[in-house]
Length: 354
Image 1 (tube, rainbow, N blue to C red):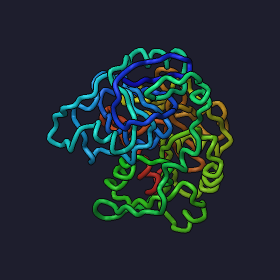
Image 2: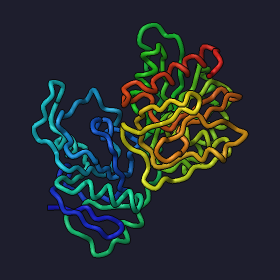
Image 3: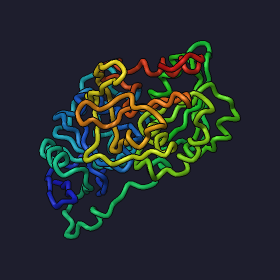
Image 4: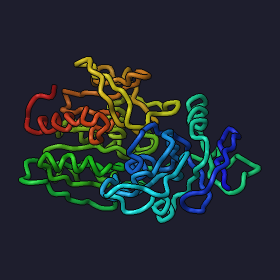
């Protein structure tokens, strides 16, 4: 037996899965009914213990082709872990992968109750452990720090376009999901991936046709260096920001961000397009949101979350830049928001951004 100990003192007993180590992290939940491989390998989960609200996880096994990056989460909580996956693409069982990656987890716990507590009390820290500690101060004191620095790439990498190259895109890697790169490559873009701390002058010296600001983990306000470099990039080239890139752009323009009570995580988040009135289903993974009101005069809000009204997108037409909080490279709708990549392509072609 092992335990999940919450910062509020609640204790959940379950069975060990994954690596046999104790770990403290920020407890969050995701509501997706599928996509556990993408969740597990999304660098944006750095420092977090992820709880799946869907009851069975692992039923289609381990499929490396679907990975989004190197796992960065600190723990994994499921109601039932499938030990006999069935899928012609599977290359093994999920538990074996957790062990190999050093990720501790629990199964057999009441994940619905964990989600309920998190929704009512907000995100809190927790610990996966073999013995319940008498003192919870270490759990409560934990903070996710140096998140982007922990997941960004170590060096510049060039990813060739599929087919004939039409555009060259510089991607700032704050914890980028691989499908962002693939989505650009499919649109005949050669993508040069830069470490998060790369100077704006270095990026501009390569004269890309456009710049992509990627997703990533942690508190956006922690990334003061990245914010300063984005400020130098704005207005120089067409820019498209996703998730953390959306938040960092807002901060670079003098806006503000706030931490949400429990965030948005999963492939079923409804977002309203303020231009068309249409609601689209999106994939999301974030615990912070841009305060749209703080950007009056700098940009216009383009999307809002249909559940809580939080900002999901901004446009800065004078700077040839737009950003979204959700993940258009994912397939929750399944292609409700993939058109945003085409919008970015049109910007690089010199067409006016709608």
